[in-house]
Image (tube, rainbow, N blue to C red; front, side):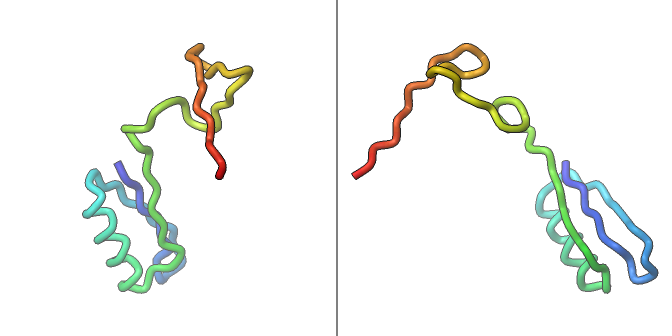
Length: 75
């Protein structure tokens, strides 16, 4: 679940889909070593908790209705 994007030597924008992180990292390195530029890799984390984007807490309640009471202690 990883997408690699890069610009080839001829200026063409390329992309490739890999399912495993190691494969994606290896191919990203290969693209760079082969003269590719602007090499980047993106993914959508299937283990993400909550909705995408920024959730907020209003009056001690999460958007799903659960109570949020964690407080950071400062020394």
